[in-house]
Length: 340
Length: 260
Image 1 (cartoon, rainbow over the protein chains, first blue to last red):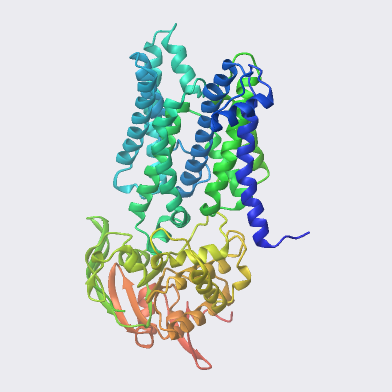
Image 2 (cartoon, rainbow over the protein chains, first blue to last red):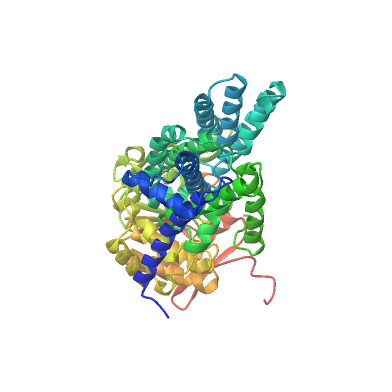
């Protein structure tokens, strides 16, 4: 049966909206603490309508509403943000192997977090310090690339240098950190984790996150043109320098905000945009929503695995690599992705 | 459109100048060819004109300094096709062609029905409408060049600047391309292109600029500039010009080496 093009489009759009919603609902029912599925939905409904049946225990309510939901929303933000940013960076550097961390955000943020941990700052300060240093490191990458920043390779190399520099600083901090208390904390942060996310942390990142997403959405067609190459984009009438800077700023902000709440979660930003591109093609107008949808599902599923598979939780950044790299290798072997 | 260069010079460093004191004015909507040996700076000259390299001297577009225009304003006057375009992502052909329209669209707009129609019209003009939904990474080099030209036409520029457009085309497509240049020109688009083949300048009846050692050596109608003596001097080997039917053709090399 062949459906008319428009019907297909609508069904496709519905699928990519419903899939993450479904993942969110399933994730809410999963966890070490057993809560029956009907209770989970009664709690959800009750929180929205204002009356929760009395037979449900307070601990169940708090488990669903104050522990699982913020964590799941964190996974949504992280999956969505990293996948969108990954797609943007790949387009901007005309390089399918670029990812959200190409310009050094991750190691910069890692240094910020490690520094705050060593100085015994509060968890909110750790988040802010990670955010600030993540953005500072991209600023340094821009400075280092200097006037030749229009050349994508220069930017990528500068990003590698800045990354390596901050990685060394992180090592230095790890070396000096108290091995009983601080060192494990730094190591866990760097592995990426959504454990213990609270609404307060999410609220800090939400305004910036939404702003960045809106900016990237506005630039969706221009990102296509930028991905054709700088000369081509310029000839087509784009102010390449301004447009690139705006788009890089927005996706850097997106990445840094995610890293500030979730630590360094690798591979989502590279695997998901490729998967999305295989499904809907490279047009960023479609690639952005589909990446966001798939990224959300991917990270929710992985986070579910992390928190249910073993008694002690596995850091999410570890699992995204273990699952993401084989998927990526599969793309390469099937020649869906070229190295060039 | 009038394109004027006033004592333009360019070098990557001061001791090695690539272009020196080049001045010329291209009037209206003619066909212009730039000839010159490998490495004389033909491509560099084009890059200086479109602002990709910063040269000293002045480039005037319709009497106004190049730097006074925004990139958007310039794109409505000049489209530039670099010698090689390296495709990265498998965009649909129609999307690539519509990208050319960006200089006419509102800043954050996506192309709509009007842009689609114009893009399709240009693809029909070039005979590539059947490629519409193909990924532009999976078509032949000659087809891809036509796609890039379609994108440039969708830009509706007054002037089309092309860097060695026939470099990657086979014998037949090269000639079809030259006819396309004439057809575009009849539609009122000025063409400036670099080429390695004096024949092409002759066939196009182009206003011909000859670069030698980084300076503008000759400038005039192809029939005056492309002569045996001049071309022999330029390329450093004997060049013969003769007639086949009504066409003037240009052949390089010794003629005394026996039958070939």
